[in-house]
Length: 317
View 1: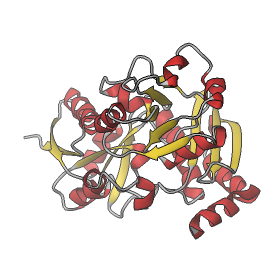
View 2 (view 1 turned 60 degrees about the horizontal axis):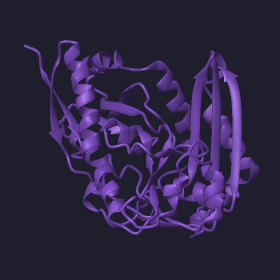
View 3 (view 1 turned 180 degrees about the vertical axis):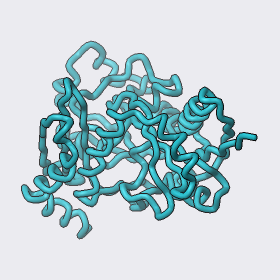
View 4 (view 1 turned 120 degrees about the vertical axis):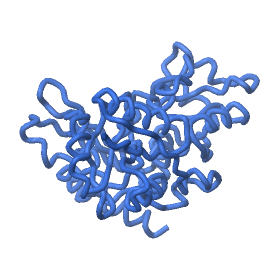
């Protein structure tokens, strides 16, 4: 008799969508699976900004604990939430095909005379430079990149799952807010007039979903490995190597993107100061066969070229 694999997930609509994706994939292989809901610390405290909580794995620790206690067999995460070093006894087994890595600007249509409604069909970069606005984000990375480009804007912190954050925007006096496109798109709540921020570099592994399990469950590991997408696995590893080399977490504005095009890996990385005033960028292009150390080498180069100083200043505050 086949086991019923227990898939641990947070309770948000997006987390459930991701967990159900894995459940469907397993069932398509003739396996049986069920979802187990687990609350995370990040879901319980919806007031403190993530960067003030200063804890890597704020959304994954509870699931890690459930895995190690064997109350679940599998945990499914948004990969950008996962620390670069997994707890002892837990192993990454599959990265699913990546959705959009892009960030989007969502306009608040609920306030009168919002100048951002004039953005549609216009070049947002020129537009944003001309007007002072207030916008919200849950990410210190997005805040730093935005302030680097538009230092005259006011940024506010926003917490909660994707649905509640979107609702908070529409109930606020903010002109708009920044979201990950993949999250809104996956659960069908991406506004039609959301504006892709093509210039904004994403968080490492943004748009990717990762599956982890216990290191001692070899039968399940072999089963889950069949779900791995090789290109997404490679690109997210490079991005997370960059993050790990810079010793970055939720409190550090680090961005990274690796893409495979015509058997070449194109990598771009950034490190900014929290206020966006300082920025170090790097770009690398190498054949897939020579891509293993791109992330680490890029991180070391950024540290050498002023990144160490930026990180030291952040650690002093």
